[in-house]
Image (cartoon, rainbow, N blue to C red; front, side, top):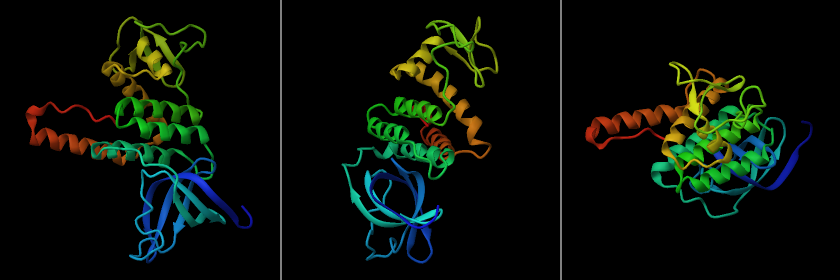
Length: 253
């Protein structure tokens, strides 16, 4: 990119931020029209800084910046809507969405449809946490060009049928099988169709879909584990050790 571009009032979310130099922040931002980018917020950590306490995750912002090369410089910040009412126990799930975007999106690659899906997921978290996560994972894979085949078998012609057992082969799609096989990714056709229609009210369906989306994402995330999943497992283990009779369930992320 040659010269300096000035971008004004773009819908955006802060995915993460890091201390930068003496009193600044390096923001990882997801914007609707410009994709993921890094912005330097000069003096943002100073007690009397211009944006002190404004640059938080899970707040729908309008950002203005100048960009020359890889990193931009924040110019202005404003709130564009009320923040989603994410409960404290759902913060980790929201951070999981952010980590997926940080790991899988290239900088300066716009994904407006995925931006809209991210906002829908945050809005749904307080009411339907696990369905919100699973639908976002599906949309993320589709947006990146790795969409799941949910309507037809691997041949691309035979419709998936509810009540039929399928082995899902990640490189090709679902293949009908007589019964669930050990060490394979087997699902009921009803679960595949429920994900297609984003109707994930059934807990058993959600469990099957979680196995599918995790396996699909693992192909592109590589060997480095997601920090949010590591924290989730640690919290679950701590809860079980502290209250062994409480019957702690799996964390949605």
